[in-house]
Amino acid sequence: MYAILLVDDDRDLCALLQRALEAAGYSVRCCLTGHEGVRALAATPCQLVVLDVMLPDMDGFAVVQQIRSRSTVPILMLTAREDSASKVRGLQLGADDYLSKPFEMEELLARVAALIRRYTRLNTADVQHKLVFDGLVIDLDARCVLRNGEPVELLAKEYALLTTCAQHQGQILTKKQIYEAVWQAEYAYDDSNIMATSSRLRKIIEPDPALPTYVQTVKGLGYRFNREVGNADYHMGDDRALPCTGCRAGRCSRKALVSAPQAAVSGCSARRYPAGAYASSRAGPPLRPNGPYLLPLQRAVHPV
Image (cartoon, rainbow, N blue to C red; front, side):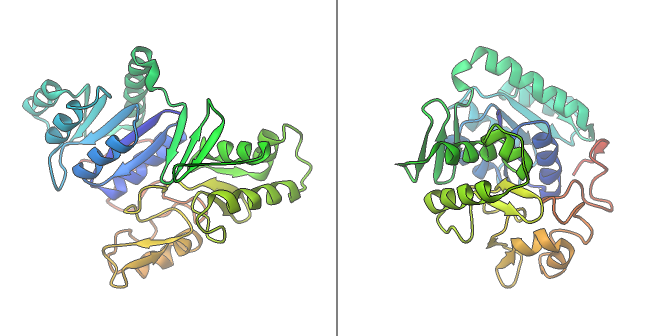
């Protein structure tokens, strides 16, 4: 799975692009500031950076310069500016492509695929053979797992369950899909093997097996590898409570966001997410916000 680093301070746009890119089969990490993006790239390599020009702490041009000082990863810049001078400047500093807002999602996906295809053909060593998350590394070639830098012993089915979920980070996998992928047999609607294996796996890899960080249960549907691992600033998506800088209490319940998103949003004093922003109470992050924020997924993305 190819990894994409998305750097944009617009949370709604990040959620929309992350959902579209993950639906296309990419692993996506979102950063809301330029400094956060530079640190994320230094910590975890990726095959593409999608970078907004207008950022709150440093502009996209400065981010390009910092990235180019240490990496040849392709950079796709997004901008609401229409002037050609900005595009020329970005390309001269090291950006590989430019896309002006508003843009069609199909065009973005086509440009992403082309840039990654060109880059990986020339840099085969950068194709991920390791899945790297906060506190957890899965080496697909060596078939080993590191927890906080220390190797852990997993049985074959535990390893298969972990890698199956991790390679589809953020996607809900049904028990049928998991059983057929891990046990290589037809699903007989007996969940005992899956439940026993997931329970053992969590006791080994999870900081708190009762509140899983990595492999999470989606009630009534299946399992999901947490899309937010390593990105505590992103205020949506899993079952834990994480800091929200806009809330008076300082914490918003992510479990509430999953089970009753509109109620959770109405209780957040930051009002980061408008009522009705979630397309499905079980789908995690929204497909699209309602109202004047963004147009539907398949249409144009408005400049911000």
